[in-house]
Amino acid sequence: MKKLKIIIASFALIVAGSLTGVVATTQPAYAACNPDQRFLTIPTWYRGIVNTSTCDLLPVGTGSGKIPLQNYIWAIVLNWVEIALQIVVYITVFMILFGGFQFLTNGGEAAKAAKARQTIITAMIGLGVSSIVIGIVNLLFRLIVL
Image (cartoon, one colour):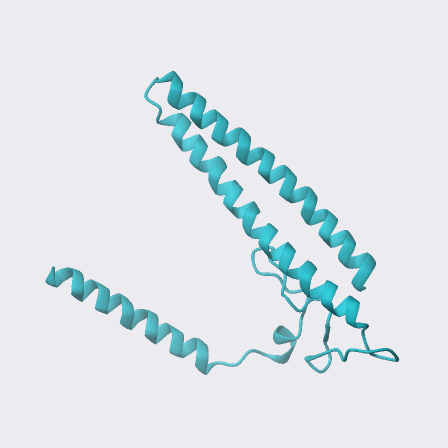
């Protein structure tokens, strides 16, 4: 029990030390303002509503340099929908790998093999559907927002 507490405390100190280094450093302006920057294919929530030269959100309204309120709301909603769908894609890929692991370790039992096969098939259907919906969301984003 004492060793476990030491390991947890050491891990917490390492994480805390690494976080202070992250907080202390500042990002360059181009990294903070790039709405097309993605992390593991996941877009930023502010894609389409930020001025890349000043790092400010675009003003809402009508006129030069302003974005209509409907487009502003659609941009945020479509970005969050795509973020959720991208997470679903990663979960389905994990489920395909998990089903493959179940299939390899079924021990010759037909019921376990059928369950693993069904897991893989269901995950592949989910992957296909979510990929198609991501394409539709990106198309809507380009048509409505940009």
